[in-house]
Length: 360
Image (cartoon, rainbow, N blue to C red):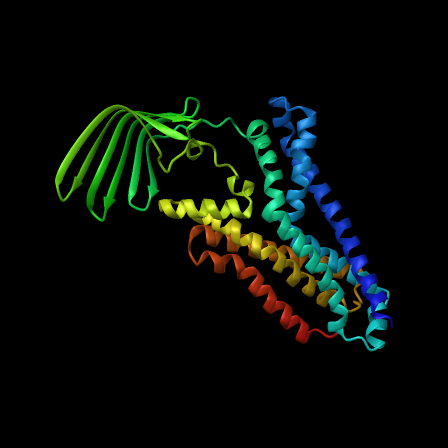
């Protein structure tokens, strides 16, 4: 048998089946999503053009990439069970092709999809997500107002800021305090009646301020009416963070994680989880492709429908495991990196076990 012809046949039909499965699943998701949000669209008078172009044309690639490992798995089971039912796999194996060799075209297709998925989630998709998330904040979510009072923010490991109140419209804060504390020792305390953001300068203007410094020379106090200064704080820190992690490219995500770490801020786990998930997806595609071939390559007496149902059941188990691991990671119960990679690790072991035990 000509291996090149066989490889082209398997890769071509595997990828075509993936496109078909992705189209059907995403179409169903969009229909469900529209029925859930149509009242919001009508209430807030969302323009049809923005609904289609800004929202759904950006929602489609989001879902394609978000559940790409599962769609690849379902496509693998669907295609492989069909050719197994037609005894094509038996013919391949009878001609001297090993099961591992037959698996190679699938894995080649999975590698292509994995690379494309990684590029999408790392650099391309976040740009589309910015448009989609802005649409959701405008027409789906309630308008955001920063309503916090007596706000405490860690802006560096030893630097703590306090605001009595902040107005997102005017970008001004009242009763601002910034303290530098080393251990239990206060080194400096900065106080201002008001702080105002200067967008052109990218600086804060502090009004009616005083600086109290404590060092080996004793205590010093200075006052002033106005000063421009740079603080590791920006108006974005007071804006809505709704799905903010989805709008970052990988370099932007890494930079934001570094910023949160430098501040010693809470909420770091959400962004670490997003980062690790983006790296796990290509490997999940490879693992689930291999499992999909293994569980569906044998002709079943129960028919193709049974094998497809089995595929959906395994996909459902993977989703549950993924969501459980993500929840554990967010709770900080175990190491974030381990929690995110756990579904891939477990399903890799399942794949190896199935490969060694299932008759083919």
